Image (cartoon, rainbow, N blue to C red; front, side, top):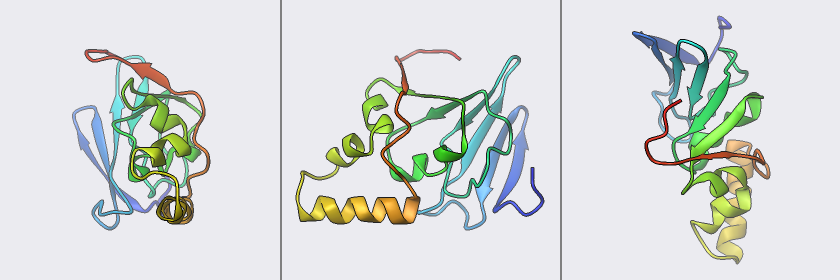
Length: 135
């Protein structure tokens, strides 16, 4: 990892939590790295991510909120999410639709999400996983 990264890494027996410099408070969040036997998985890459610091083989998004997606743009690995959230993870429009219907409030929220979290239209393809899925 780069020496000037905006997070602190804490290791817990194969799982690393990348604590954002502000403690993970919104708009930042904490990112989890799981090192398995055959692959490295990143869970919820936060706004504190400026690169892929671990060479992730896959990314898992726990749920479709902007603070869990903000660092996704720095990863080239396949993106996974629960089937109930996969559409909203893959599309900014679908994510915003879960918050508020079209109109001025939605337009304001979209602008904020784009400016504060740096989100664009979404990562595109998201692999949907079902309950009980094991990576």
